[in-house]
Amino acid sequence: MANSSRQNKAWDEFQAFEENPPSRWDEHDISNFRRIVKQLEEEFDVDLSHCQISDIRVRQRSFSGSSVSSSGTYLNHKQIEEKFCEPETGKRQIECVRLFFERRRKESIRNSGPKPPKGAAGY
Image (cartoon, rainbow, N blue to C red; front, side, top):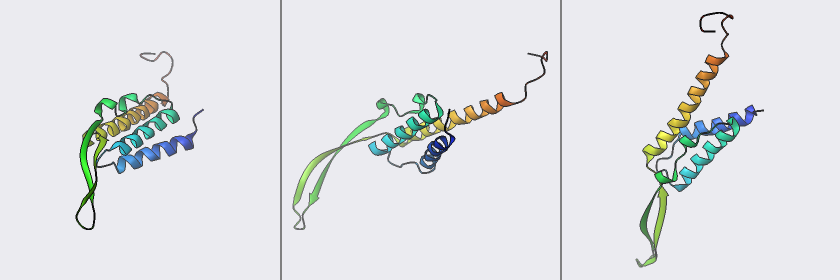
């Protein structure tokens, strides 16, 4: 049996993410989105794998970072690697989740309407 308070919590978290999407879509943002989608899958017992950000969409970029001492000397030069996805990809996947649940709601409304009398056209 579905727990409606847990479903509401999962949906509220998705809506908050949707209303304030990340601008950079770094590894933390991707992980957070994946967690939210997984939570929706579990609470609503649905398959949203087509809405997840796939590993193939995650890219890696490298850049150099250094700190500078007060005397102007460069310290701790290191190569930094960061995983990210394009913001457009993130937006599409958010929309995928939104559309999935909109269709599901419309189907639920359509299927819950009154049934025509037996013998009516098509029945």
